[in-house]
Image (tube, rainbow, N blue to C red; front, side, top):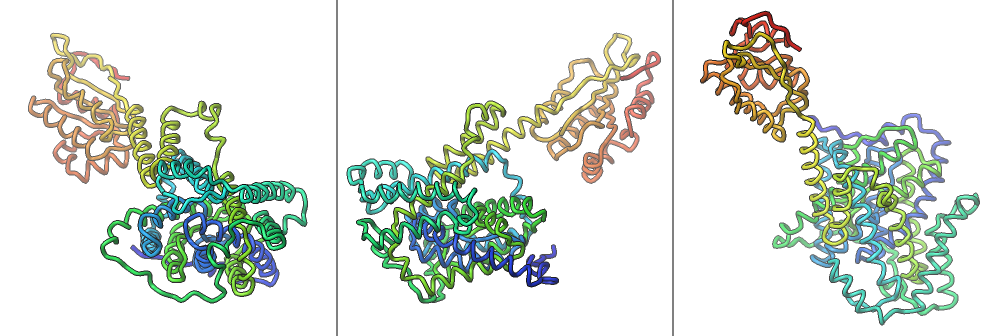
Amino acid sequence: MKISFRPRLLDTLPGYRRASFSQDLSAGITVGVLALPLAMAFAIASGLSPAAGIWTAIVAGFLISVLGGSRVQIGGPTGAFIPIIYAIVVDYGVQNLLIATMMSGAMLLAMGAFRLGSMIRFIPLSVVIGFTNGIAVVIFLSQIKDFLGLQIANLPGEFFGKMKALIDALPTLHLPTVAVAVASLLLLLAWNRRAARTPWMRRMPGPLAALVIMTALNALFSLPVDTIGSRFGGIPRDLPAIALPELSLGTLGKLIAPALTIALLGAIESLLSARVADSQIDDRHDPNQELMAQGIANIAAPLFGGFAATGAIARTATNIRTGGRTPVAGAIHALVLLAVVLVLAPLASAIPLATLSAIVVVVAINMGEWHAFAPTELRRYSVQYRTILLGTFFVTVVFDLTLAVELGMVLASLFFIYRMSDLTRIERIQIDGGNASDGTPRILAYRLFGSLFFGAANKLENLLLMQEGHPAVVILDLDKVINIDTTGLDILQTLHRNLHKRGAELILCGLNPQPGSLVQRSGFSERLGADNIAADLTAAVARARQVQPPAAEVSYA
């Protein structure tokens, strides 16, 4: 298999003009400004320092743009990763998180290289909505501590432990922190609402506006709340030293499952974001190139102290709305973040953590498709859809995202098998004049519909238990069968052997390309005999007459 590596940047550079750069520059600056508060908020919510989020956005964001398969995708840390990253930090520590991130990058790179990008679309919508809404709830729960200013040394990652810790810490609620958090939340919601109708407000994203205003108030009045400076000592202005994380062979095997979770979620979110972007700019991204870029970005980011990154839907949409049309805009967004760190890092010390918590709460609320849980909406769909959706959501919130996706996929597969089996049926074709003198049929004919696979094999097995005497010929019309798997083929072979022992013949007719190819490749056509594979039902009945002459003229339907 030939591995193709061609970033979309190479397709956009020929014919690139000053006007295009002007648009990309404007979009890149806007998205870079938006990414700053989000990167810090997501990192803190994940149990990491704000600098880790910023360097993830810089390094991964730059690589995803210049190496990716989408013209407008913006990469960086996202809210969807918060529960996963936080759980890994709690269970294994920061160094092992960096190793797991690099392992996930290698997985993503391999998925893209082996052209598995399109397979991500096989995940059912009910599973995607279920775990997306579940992640939103988990993110919301993770922000209660900083939103209310609760005194909790280490918030557990496990659901029941987390809820117990939050309930036990409620008496430590800090009113000034609550006031700042609520004010930040209301300011952000009001800004977003007014910005839709006020052109000048649209130039400053809502998260940045809330961050600047609340940071200014905190600097002026010295509010008694936790800040980036008080908890993390601020953000270093120096470039981070490039270093490999410390590798512990004892925990390497335990990190495979978390790394796989990061890789799957990153692949799903990035390709969903790219697909949404395609519809807005009338383009088509390369999913395999996008996965390879995501993989390289996740391998590189931990070298700078960063963590998992993927395509960010909100930042990508902002890039499109502000005029970004090539990967240059994404590269500029990363360079803007770098300039902010090098020049304005000292000002970040006064940022209230409650404001960042409010920003993450709004992200959690906006990322969920809550309308899908409305009773009127659920009643529109089948019991199977509701079971997958609610089951995936519940397991995501209470247990684990990896388990939720596995459960959702297993349920979806089982329901699909059941549905396909239900659609597969066998009907008797009446043939006059094909009976023996005692009235028992000597020629039996059946028409099959659907897919003859392992889930529907039991329906064909019933033909092995025929109670209508000892027919000399059995005709199976497969014109309406679109697929046969090896289990279905085995049942056909078993039917043929049983009939052969009785001195009877099996005739197949109307074979479509896939069933015909399997019958041919397996050698079953040779054992059956070329004369017993007919083009259609007419030819099959003519062959049956040769094997068992009818008592009278026959007619068939």
